[in-house]
Structure formats: structure tokens, C-alpha cells
Length: 420
Ligand code: GLV
Ligand code: MN
Ligand code: MN
Image (cartoon, rainbow, N blue to C red; front, side, top):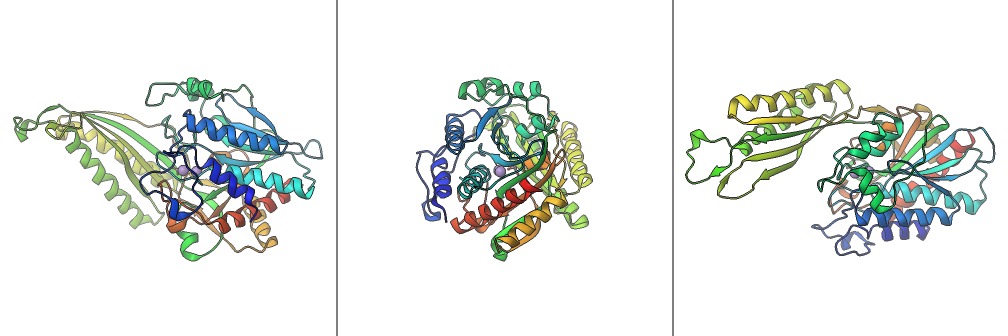
């Protein structure tokens, strides 16, 4: 194990912990307090600054685009060859772990360091990329930076999105010093490789060190506001109430029931989650006046995802008649399921064989910037096991030996791609 990658993950993993502290082992995790570093926060600035420092140390040239994506470039030895891009994100969910995203960024930096140590001659340029706001925990849209990069979200729309404090992405990026002006198209990019923790139980349960992703699920988010009538919990008779939370409860059960039914009927791993429920005014003796819901729907089959999304929106609209409430629905850009490039899948498989690490092909139930990149360039993903399959939670962990396995496969993959 080369300790500098471990050190990078532990150091960067401090940012967004309260209190800020280094976590080196599983038994040091706090089940109540994980990593919190949505885009634009002080912790997000610190982790970006730390990564940029490491990138500069290994001689990479840094550019930042208009939505805060960071590109760190090592030139290739032959001119006119397409770039091999590699990276992930540094923002986090609320109360996540230190590996989600960060492993793909610091692993890519480590791969460049290993190539430099060996004096490896990469023919193609290599760029380490950090995508802005992959998690959507501040600006209400997952995969934001890569959506802007591939052009499915306009730069203006991205920059005008607001966080819960009412600050635009443009203002947030200015504040942390990552509002750049680099205009990075993708015409000169040949490949994108993202290494990531699996965030599910497959590799951990089967004790297989490496996953090679063939498909990434699509993600649809549905936001809804249900407006009822706030009133006294003691004096308002049951029959005249317009209880926004009672109406919302229908949607919680609807999403669970329909996701199960679709999955049972079609077996494509459909999932539906009401992950966000905010009740106003949230007082024990007050009939809930307003509820905001955030709903996450995923499938590897586009039609299943679209069907469940549309049925959910319909069920929400029906609440108006059933409960006398008013509803508003907002559906941000949907991310389609993405098959990854067979050519890159093969190179990763061959690379794992070269470094003698067992690997299996699998799908990803988590969303990744790779699914956007796959729409424009030949893309692959490398997974390593997540302890007990846990992620997006403070107990997320990956063993250091698995971190090393991942970076060995990634380094070999980048080397092979850089000479293809
Ligand atoms: C992104 O991490 C997602 O899968 O929600
Ligand atoms: Mn995540
Ligand atoms: Mn991630």
C-alpha cells in the first residue's frame, strides 16, 4: 500500500466532519456524524484546495470551467491524440462518507503519480477531473457539473440554480474561488474513466475486489409541494381538515408499492424513494400546513423509470381532489440509464488481469457523472467494495487493501488507454 493515497483520503475526509477530525479506521466512524460538504460550503472549498495542491505537486496544469469543474492536465508525448479523462467529485451528500467521489479523484491523482514515478510515457494527454455538485445536495440537481459539460444543462441554467439559502451557484462558486472561465468542449476527449466505491453489497458479499460497470441506472427526481391548511390540532374536526402530511403519506406508500410492483413484474431492479419530507410548521399541536417532498426513482430500463415518474406525478395531482390540498410539481432534468463502452469495459478487464486482481462485471445502482460522460465519450467505471454495502451514510467505509486494488487497476487502465 502506498501511503500517500491513504493519507490523501484521510486528510480530505476531515473536511465536512464536525468536529473536523481524521478517520483512519472503521471503528473511528461516528454513526451519527458523517461528512457534509455540499458545493459552495467552506468544507467544499477546503477539499477542492487540498486536491488542487496535490495536482500541482505532480505537475498537472489546472483549469476551472464556468460551473466550477476542475481539469488537471498532463500532456501526452504524441500530438493530436484524444485525451484520457479520469476523475469523480468532491462534494458530498448530507452526512455521507469520505470515499464517495473523493476516492475517484484522489485515486486518479495517485495513478498520475505512479506513472510519473515509473517514468511512464503516456502518448495521450491525461486529465484528472473534479465535477461540481454531483450529489445535488445543495443545488437540487444531481450530476450538475457533468450535465453542463456535456451540454444537456445550459451554463446559465446551472449558474442560476439556488441552494436552500437562496444563493445562486454562480455566487457560491465565486465565494469559494472556483468560478472559472475555461470553456472545455469534449471533441478532443477519447475516454472517461471513473473509479468509485460500489455503494452496494455485491462485491463485499461475494468477496470480489473489483467491479467493472456495464450499465448505470437512470435517475429521475420529482419534487412536490403539498399545500394544506395549518390549524389547531385540538379544535379542528377531523372531517374539515386539509392535512398536507396525511396527503403526503399517500405518496410515500404509493412510491414504495409501485416500485415493488414494477420490479416484481419486470425484474429490472426498479427503486423508488421518498427521501426528503419537510413538514411545515412541524409542530406537534398543529395540523400540517405544507409538506415538501423529494422523490428519487431509478431503473436501468428507461421506460420503467419514466412510467414510475409519470405515475407518481399523477398520484400527486390526484391529492387535490382527494384531500382538498393544492400541489405543485417540479421535475428537474432526468438522467437516462447509460450503457458504458464495451471497448473500455474490455480494457479494464484486461488491466485487472495484468495486475492479477479478480474482477466481475456488474451494474451500478448509484448515479455517477460517468453516465453523462458516456453520452459523449467512450466511458468506463471501476468499483471497489463498500463495507456492508453502506454508503450515503456516516458508516460508509472501504478497506485500505481494496483502495489499493482499485488504484492498481485504475493505473493500469489509464496506462493502457493512453497508448491505444
Ligand atoms: C449519486 O451519488 C446518487 O446515486 O444519488
Ligand atoms: Mn454519492
Ligand atoms: Mn459518488
